Image (cartoon, rainbow, N blue to C red; front, top):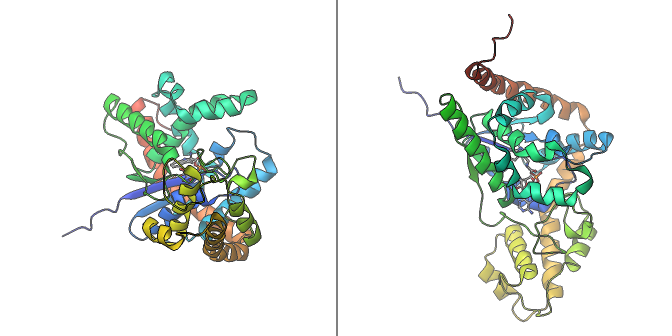
Length: 336
Ligand code: TYM
């Protein structure tokens, strides 16, 4: 009898550490939606990662629920994918400990995100910030993940997850699937609207630097109007002019137009016209997301039901992997 080939498994997550931005959407969530029809997809709200920087507890709880709602509003379909909250599946913390004993101090010291974040949070360089990539490796490896759709900033974290998996597999025996990153060309790195040489970040202290998926049309248009460009007034893609290049890239993502088409459309017109067009295209794209979000965000029972079903489904897979790992490292069997 012929058996159907097993679908590849996709895993990804975002931190509920602020309102998700168009960077998160174009770099990751849009791809999550595109992949959900063809693969076994598991998507998570990474609340445990979020506490590596100080969080207000009530706000974190609220944002966890809102992040669930945002995923769904962006098109993630809870009927097709497993959607859950990281802290509701304790296997993540449990595997993370075992993996941390198979991760080298030197490897973690080289992580650029650790260096950046510890420079920014000098008053709170906690051990969790340092072992952050180990928890992320646990997230990925628990589900025998083949592909991880992320933005470019997460590539180094996928790389170290592979290193850890490889080390464990050769020290014990083949246990973990080797994950690969899945990044698309356009959305890979959306830059800040205020400092276009930096990536757009939801935790940027300056709200003009990012577009939240929930920003009003007026705010979106205002933020694009104030976006930092240069004094050349030339709508032309040029890596040496990161501000205008970022806006061209964004307009291309929002409208599906190519760079050449955009340059032609705005040939001889100033930045004012172009920025307005980018703002309007962005607001148009987010209109549907925001309407859907408003419909579901106050329906706590609906969202909690998704979380419950999601954590049950995720736990079934995660604990199978964890049991294997515990056996291989020599932990005494659980009492029956
Ligand atoms: P986070 O919450 O910072 O971002 C979520 C996703 O959005 C992508 N992203 C961007 N893409 C393009 N341009 C940008 N400016 C931009 N900013 C963010 C990120 O690359 C990411 O894909 N550590 C992760 C969350 C995580 C995770 C995981 C991801 C926890 N466990 C396991 C994958 C697999 C993070 O902080 O993402």
